[in-house]
Amino acid sequence: MESPENYVNKLAQLITASKIKTKSAAVSIPVSSAIIKVVQLPLMTDEELKVAVASDSLWENTVQLADNLEDYSIGGQVLKRDTAENLMHILFVASKLDDIDNYLDIVRQAGLNPVVVDVRCFATRNALALREDLTKSDAPVAIVEFGAFENYILILYKDSPFISDI
Image (tube, one colour):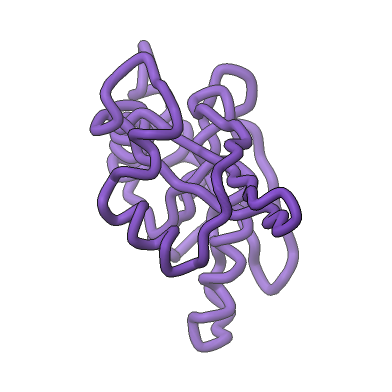
């Protein structure tokens, strides 16, 4: 994050060199920039869970973070419901909004339009799901990851992947 212009320039070069016409991109936030843990909660129905998430009470009462919850983009996915124990296990994922904004600024400055933003593996899954929803066109999908350890662009074109380090 000390020199985002280097990433902007390299990403723009990759787009030009690869003759990529699409402007849509899935942005993969590295796991190193996220808080990921499994949270155990009392068993709830999908509707109860939806209400708890919408009212912000679910995460307030479940997890303790170093900063305010408002400083994070938070998501969760039910992994398991155990009716015998009256418990459920939820995958909790939180990323700082400032970190997300930094990654999105880089992608936008390189001339791309982020359409999916998620933690690493979820971004890939969501990009592929988005592609299926786009009238089955041959338009490529780009997945960009910037992080402390891995920096790459993944381009899916006609179901063939192209990966390049950044």
